[in-house]
Image (cartoon, rainbow over all chains, first blue to last red; front, side, top):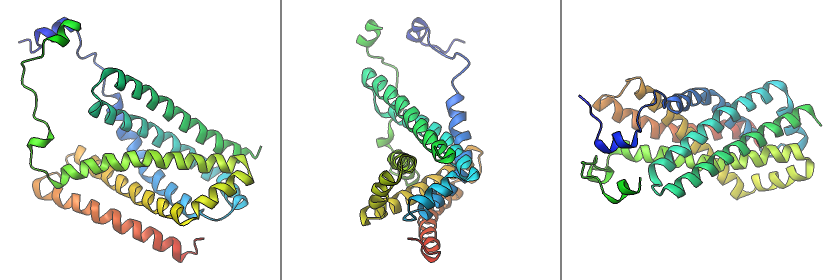
Length: 126
Length: 135
């Protein structure tokens, strides 16, 4: 039995046998984010008020820098998908939705790139 | 597309949230989204922190003056709770995805464990950091 409505058939939209990537990626980045985020939270708070030189030395050490870059990658992807889901759920006007989706994507890339660039610059000490 | 938009569908829609009695798990679902959105602002502050450290001493001094002000510390405290609440809530959803602790009674205590746990972890974190000589 064909469960599709006449309107659905005319529009020709439906399963393209993909579409669960973001569901899966959101859970993957959540799992990665658990240890990374707890470590990151400790790092940020414990470095409060330590001064430029101390912070630069600690952020520049290879282990901290690599963990911090992993933190940024996992959480920026998670943030991008999470905000996108909120937009999809609550913004119903198509133009507004598309505009916000584009802004969200640009924002995630900008934040991710800025953070990784900053960590690398601190690490390489240029 | 235009024709379709002019003729509203007569097909039944699934009822929206407001027809149901408000439950703790619904409010916690909302809070998970709210803390998630708050942490977007947290990522902006984190970016400022890293860029300031990369830019040099002057930029970092400006950031640190904000961070160590009372309002900065209050924001940091708020973010630390939001992070822990969102992480614990996320673990709860991952467990439920696997079908673990999702029965009527189990899910109610898991939700309460989320609330109590995030507050307890936040206090514990700051006690540890203050005892270890935080500046």
